[in-house]
Image (cartoon, rainbow, N blue to C red; front, side, top):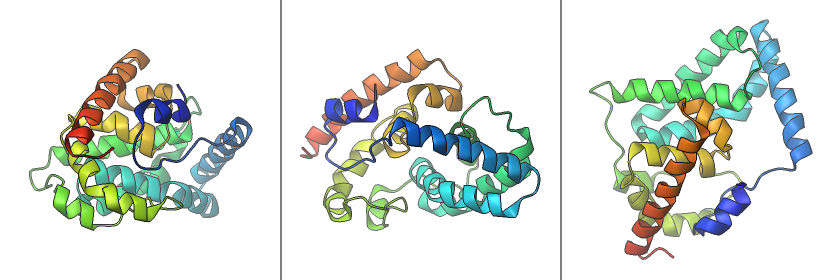
Amino acid sequence: MTIIQAHQTFHLPFPFPFPRHVTDLSATQDREREWLRQVARGDRAAYEHIYRAYYRRVFGYLYRMTSPEAAEELTSDVMLEVWKRAGTFRGESLVSSWIFGIARFKALSAFRRPHVPSVDVEQAQRVSDPTDLQDATLVKRDLRAGIRKALSGLSAEHQEVIELTFYQDLSYPEIARIIDCPVGTVKTRMFHARKQLREALNAEGVR
C-alpha cells in the first residue's frame, strides 16, 4: 500500500508528504548510499549532505517518540553515530532504514533512563513541529491538540508505525527492518493503529 492509498483509506485530517516519483526516489537512494560510503572514508562534505537530509527527520521522530527535552540531545547522538559507524553500512538496506534503526535504538535506550520524561500533550502542542517544511502549518496548528491527544492514547508500538509510515514516509519493508519484525506484523500493527486513531480522533471531534 502506498502513502497515497494509506492517506485515502485513513482520511487523516492533516497533510503528509506524498511520495516522490519512483525514478527520483531511486536516484536519491543511490546518492545517499554514495554519500555514506564517502563518509566512511572521512569525507566531511558528504557527511554534511547526510546531516542536512536527515537531521530534521530524525529530530521529528525522536521528538514525538521520546520528549521535546530529550529530542535534541538524542538527535545529535544519532548523527554522531552515523559519522562513526558509516563504515559498517553494507548497503543491504536503504540509508533511511539504517539511520532510523540507530534512532530507534537511541529512543529505546532513552526510555530506560529514569530521568527522561514522557511527552506532555499540552506542552507538545505549543512547540512548533520541527519537521514543518512545506506543510500547511496553519491547518496543522488548528488540529494539533486533538491529533496529539489521540496519538498519545495509542500504544508505543502503534505510535511507532504511525510515525514511521506517515511522518517519515517509510515503506512497510523498511519499517520491518527498523523494528526487526516481519512485514506482516507491521501491517497488523498499522491496521489496529489506524482503527484506534480514527476512533480517538472521532471522540475528539477531529474529522
